[in-house]
Image 1 (cartoon, one colour):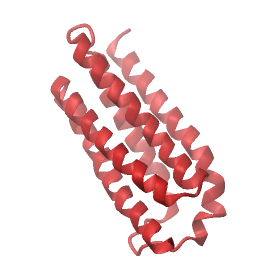
Image 2 (cartoon, helix red, strand yellow):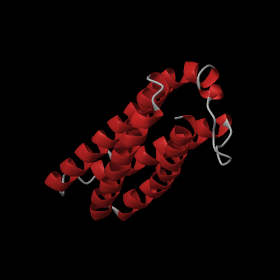
Image 3 (cartoon, rainbow, N blue to C red):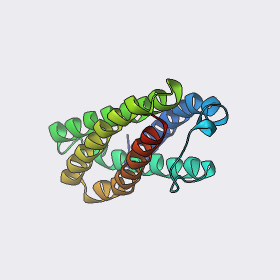
Amino acid sequence: MNKITKILTVVVTCLAVGYLSSTVTKSAITTWYPTLVKPSFNPPNWVFAPVWSTLYIMMGVAAGLVWNRIDFEKEIVKKALIVFAVQLGLNALWSYLFFGLKNPMLAGIEIIILWLMIFETYTQFSKINKIAGYLLLPYLAWVSFAMVLNESIWWLNR
């Protein structure tokens, strides 16, 4: 499989995970979420879809660049891609916890673990391909913001 095919495969996978996560989110966005007290820095709802789509594409490109090195650094690439898969699963789990279960406290605990796994993915990817590491920095920044937002929503609605 060539580099472009690897990148496209992971981009499509990331976008699919994002789409599946959004199915849990959709009904809560119009029913439960509007009833919550939110902090003044809460972005409008329309911001989330383009931001997440962009981040999923960047994550996919990063993972594809790392995957492309598998023939040269098999063990470290395998480890990095496992960490990537775990964080992607945690990413999807957050939507289920926050919007599906309507549990900002549990989602707040989980997002801390997610952040740590994203940071570990960044660390692993950076060892293999600097650009792949850099591509994860906006994701890390957004999840940092999302963590503050999540905890604020929990605090304001407890």
